Amino acid sequence: MKVFFFFDDFSGNRPVWLNVLWPHFKVIKESTDTVFLPKPLVDKRLLDQSRLLARGEELWKMIVDGRIIRQQVLNELDPNEPNVLLVWALNGRDVKWTSVLNPIWSAFSHRVLVIGDAVQPSHASKKLLERFDRITCFCRDLGEEFEQSVGVRTLYWPAHTDVLNFQSIHDYRPIDLIVVGRRDKKMHGPLHRHFNSRNRDRVFLDFVTRTQMDINCEDEFILLMTMYNRSKASFCYEASKVERFQGRSPLMGRWIHAWTSGCTVFGRRPIGSGVSEQMDWPESTIELPDDPRDAIQLIEDILSDEASMKQRRNRNVIEALERHDTRYRLRDLFVDLKLPLPSHLQNGLAELNRSSAAIRAMDNT
Image (tube, rainbow, N blue to C red):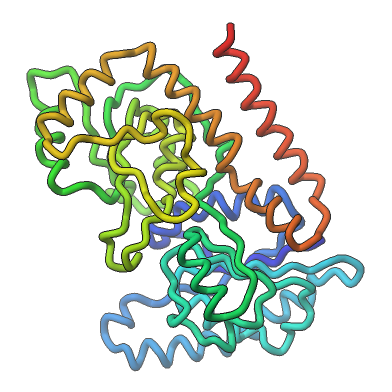
């Protein structure tokens, strides 16, 4: 079996949102015989100048780069094995670009669209969407809308990452609290001021990966996970009030990153369909009181209980290893498509089991 992975080019200095997708590609590449079909990114400078010019540039790229991509596919097709197309989609443009594959669409034995962000069915042409054999979606509620409007079987793919290679149960945690990206505006200021005050031995890191240096997706994700791995606790808040999610409340990647790193998670848990089953162990997320003063006291009490922090750290990593690695999502897809599991994927799944069992054994000694 050969997998053709169609998405933006990861090389060089890319938009910050690409960094959390790099480990998905890494796992796919390690688990399958993978051909990467990179497409060019939008020239943001041109987009800022003129949308008309940007559209013209996009069409030209689709003509020129489309020929290159099609030839790459034809050169790499396996005449004796399944050829699976995986298209990662974060917006309507990602779906639109699949039109460059029209002349060779039938060359793929299986065609899968992976919805990785709040792309709505209305954001892309129904004609392009309905020709996929499967659609996977990070949000079950959104996935059901795709299935109803497009008529393609949809699989629930809750958030995931390369847990196997980025897990951490290490005790070295000089950062008490970390927040990455979305935060509760009412809570953030009081908590940040309290835990970073000069008379307390605490560190609350409001972390961004982009500073003064150019950085590629791989290095940026490694930096992100290093900061999580050195933190005792992280903040995660459900996303229903974010405009692009249109009231939906899915499990987001920041939970997976925090659990993988052994962080205790504070915040508000998501409430979307299917989410509770993905985080149903004790204290997977510790909900904060509405009053920041009460929240501060709760956080202080929990951070001070080092034995419970360690126990929770191990449990969160175990659960991430057993539920939320990208290898499980690939396994579920291949099983649904009635495709054999590649040997490298089977090895990765076995290693996940061994890693989880090792931590469980430590807890029992």
